[in-house]
Image (cartoon, rainbow, N blue to C red; front, side, top):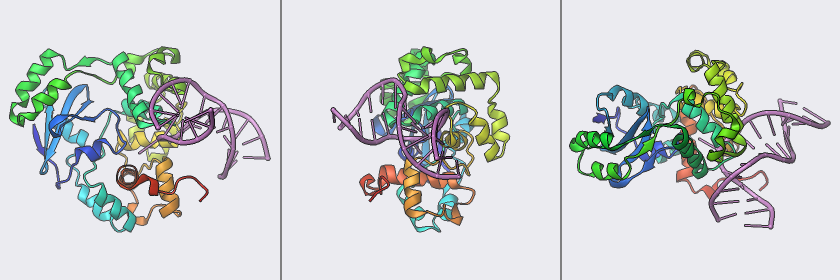
Length: 301
DNA sequence: AACCAGGCGCATA
DNA sequence: TATGCGCATGGT
């Protein structure tokens, strides 16, 4: 299917590699492959048109929501550009969209992310999916997808054939009763017991995503933090990347460095209410655009 | 061979 | 409230 992104800019690479998700990868022909909502998904963009290769084809609304294609990001950029540094970050990282990811997947992924690096985070998440998820992209799906893809240009079938097989992220129910020891194949280290605690609290209803979604930010954050291994940063990642609470403001070490360098007194007034959006531009800016070595690292000189 | 990685829990003052 | 340290694992 083809969808026109509202107000132009949607950049798949910026969106997928700005640190909000861990399962998307670039494949051939300008396509990106990922898994969401239990589907194998291929995406490309050209001149404002977002092409989505997925089966079944009749869920456009779902993908509009997942990719946030109906939000006008130029309004965010315009607001944030009142500040010089944010303006530069927005320019450099144009095309970022905040995905609406599954809450459980986001929670587990960012528990895994703590004191960890991105390649290893992705590896642990992938092993979780391979071990406990459902295999998708079998030959039946492939045939259906190739038929579906015929209107999307000749590039997709090649990209698809090479990357057809994938595993869904397991639902919490699938992991019911799991203990840290059962997660040994993931090689998640000390995070295994955090994952187990999250699974237990989600399945028992102690942590209820619908309730959390309806709560104001502070209350929602506190609820998530009842899970062992979830602090302010992981909680805010869930609130921003799963519930799209734009005032959530995950402070990782990179954002902290930016804050101490540019905003010792806090974000400027133009970011009020959209701190999370500002955070994402800033994070991508220092990690993927600006020379990383040029940012002030450490506390001394 | 130390040091680091999208943090967090716990101990200590 | 504010520091400091250990933590599993894997890559430089």
